[in-house]
Amino acid sequence: MEFSINASDGATIITVQAARIDAAVAIRFKDLMQNATDGLDGRIILDLTQVDFIDSSGLGAIVASMKQLQPGQKLELASLNTNVDKVFRLTRMDTVFPIHNDIRTAVSSHAG
Image (cartoon, rainbow, N blue to C red; front, side, top):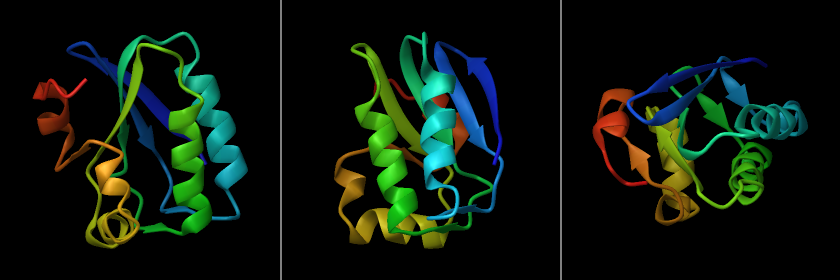
């Protein structure tokens, strides 16, 4: 699992470069997120464009990543495909995370 990180209009975009966030990569995901967000300020947008499957371990890893953020940091999600979006809605995690249809909308939003 790898991430790419870019800054855009006051937000940091972390793009997950993997098709799955599941039990096999959940710990690696949390570690990568902690390293990627260390020292950042403000909005962090997790781009899930490439992710087409997430299980409970993957969901837990994203929640844990949010909980390890420092004051002043906020995690938002963008570009969830239908299956991933369904997991967030069924577990009511859509009430915990701001979820944007795409990166363009996320960046232009002032949810943070």
